[in-house]
Amino acid sequence: MASDTEAEAGASGVPGASAPLVTLTLAEMRFEDGTPVLGALELSLRPGETLAITGPSGVGKSTLLRILAGLETRFTGTLQVPDRMAMVFQEPTLLPWRTARDNIRLTTGLSAKAAQEALDEVGLADHAGQYPTQMSLGQQRRLSLARAFGSAPDVLLLDEPFVSLDPELAEEMMVLFARLRAARGLATVLVTHVETEAKMLASRIVTLSGSPARLGAERQNKGAYFQLSASGVTSSKS
Ligand code: ADP
Ligand code: MG
Image 1 (tube, rainbow, N blue to C red):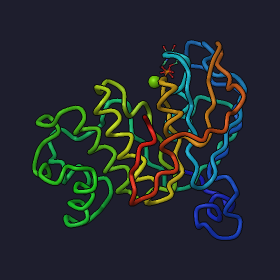
Image 2 (image 1 turned 135 degrees about the vertical axis):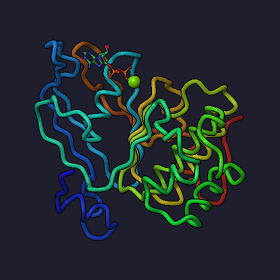
Image 3 (image 1 turned 45 degrees about the vertical axis):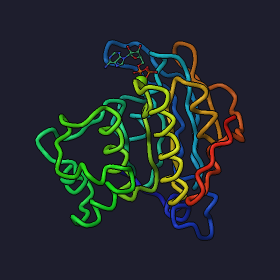
C-alpha cells in the first residue's frame, strides 16, 4: 500500500502527529454493472482516534471500508494510507485447517510465545490448539481481533465486529476491543449499522446514506467507552 511522509510522521507520534494517517477523497465508486454505490465524499483518520461509520444495511459501508483497506480499486479519487493496516471482516476469515495459534502466527509472524500472549489477552488462553470450526462465533471473533492487533498495525479497520452476537457477548467484546485499543492508542475505523455501538466506542461518528451514498455531517462523540484506560475497564452504563 502507498505510504506518504505525513502518514509516517503521524504514526510515529512525534512532530506532525496530528497529521491524518488516512485520507480519502472519493469522487465516485461504481460496480462493473455501472451502478454507482458511493458518491463524492471525504474522510480522514488521525492518530489515536476511532471513527465510526454508521448507516443502514446495503448502503455501502463495507464497500467504503474495502476501499480504505486497498481491497477495492474500482473507484475514482485519491487515497493515502499507512503501510501497516489490519482489517477484521464481518465474517471471521480464519484458516480452517490451522489452529488458533497458527492463525495468529501465519499472518503476523509472531513467535509461538507472543501468539500465546495475544490469545491470553482476548481470553482464549486455553484455545491455542483448537481449530476455528471447534470455536463459537464469539471465540472466532476474538481470534480475528487478536490476529489483527497482533500484526501491530498503524490503522485498524473493523467491519461489523459485534454483529450476530447476543447482547451480553457483544458488550463483552466491545469492552475487550476498547481495552486493546487503549493499550496501543490505535487509530480505528469502525463500521457498524448499530448506532449505540458507535456511541459507545467512537470519538467521531459519520453516517452514510442515500444512493449513491454520501457521508452526512460529522459528530463528535463523548461516549461511555472510548476513553477507557488500558487498566481500568469501567462501564459508565447504568
Ligand atoms: P453495507 O456494508 O452498508 O451493508 P455494502 O457495501 O456491502 O453495504 O453494499 C452496498 C451495495 O452494493 C449493496 O446494495 C450491495 O448489494 C451492492 N453490491 C455489493 N457488492 C457488489 C458487487 N460486487 N456488484 C454489484 N453490487 C454490489
Ligand atoms: Mg457490510
